[in-house]
Length: 372
Image 1 (tube, helix red, strand yellow):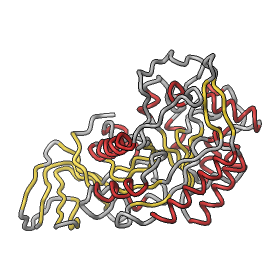
Image 2 (image 1 turned 90 degrees about the horizontal axis):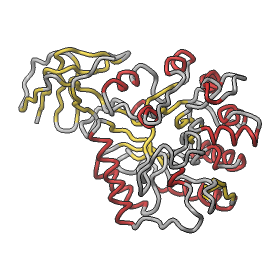
Image 3 (image 1 turned 60 degrees about the vertical axis):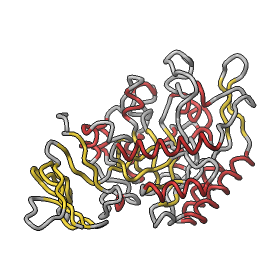
Image 4 (image 1 turned 180 degrees about the horizontal axis):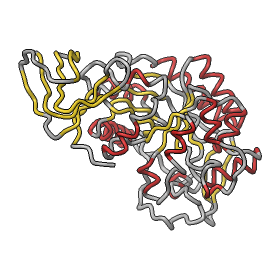
């Protein structure tokens, strides 16, 4: 059965790059795209009008927590006013021994909701930076059933965050927990890389640069090379992390990762906001953005998350000019960030996913784009 989508703005690949076709068309037959670009004059069994809409390849969302990234009460800016841009610590640093893990049914429901929400907003490739907590088989089945493409593995760290009775943040180091977490992640990748008809691929996820010791980060990178998979960690995400790394290593988080060999063209950095380029870091020595570019690393920025705290990159244009691959995390919140996302190069290991030539979620009809 051949289906024609016509009348909208169509984003299509012309052999060397993507361009927009006004009054364009997309034709697919069963699960294969047979035409994408200008008007189509051939026969079609079904015609769908995309008038006033943008028809594009599926977006790549470079930063998703399918295990959920919300607490069980409202997050207020002043809930942890001493946490300096890390308001998630309101629920991510509980009293030790007081946090009850959610039941398996809740975990499964949350995973499903997050994946469906991402698909609804047009993202068909998901980089899951912290979602596979328990029930691996169920996770793989869900990816297979939904038709989404995923990079990920269970996250791990050897410094857990807690709050004491006076509300002060502290880090509890246990090297054995981190090593076991890495082993679990490696086991997940060995067991499931290539599952879901090839749409589930491995990626190692040491949780945050300040919650992983240097030996754990080095062991992770070595495992990634052995497995031939990319790596992700959060870095430059908040000022507590920035200052802790400065105190421990006398380097910025980005420079520290570069010096231990973590940064290369298969490394994705979550956020990358607080660097030498940001005035709030108060550290104008060196050039973290240039370091990212020279190492070939990718930055998965999260503009929506930071906008809620009145924080931005300093600046998005500076990142583009310097050369690191800089991708907004949620280009599907509105079409406006999506247009920026397509102006920079996708992670090399995910590039093939951005324009998959199938109809299993590969193309998305979005509302009319707004002006920038």
